[in-house]
Length: 71
Image 1 (cartoon, one colour):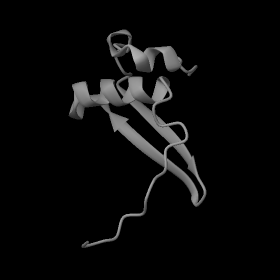
Image 2 (cartoon, one colour):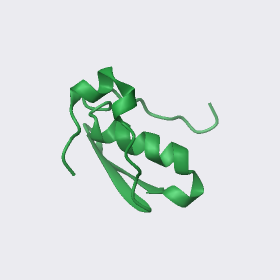
Image 3 (tube, rainbow, N blue to C red):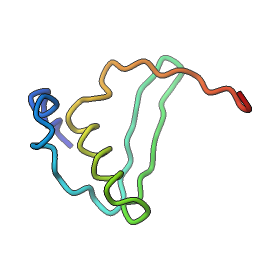
Image 4 (spheres, helix red, strand yellow):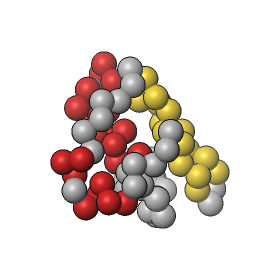
């Protein structure tokens, strides 16, 4: 899917697309690929928001930190 563009990040009111029923977001990291499977039925508003942020490039260049179990 094509990126919506950085301009959308400056105006969140333009980021209102409805997410597909199910989709996969793929993030490439220095430690490998992270894939997040989203099912819109479980959280429609959250799925729509995440979908629009990914399409808009919000997560491009973001640093992810490791998660330590029990910390």
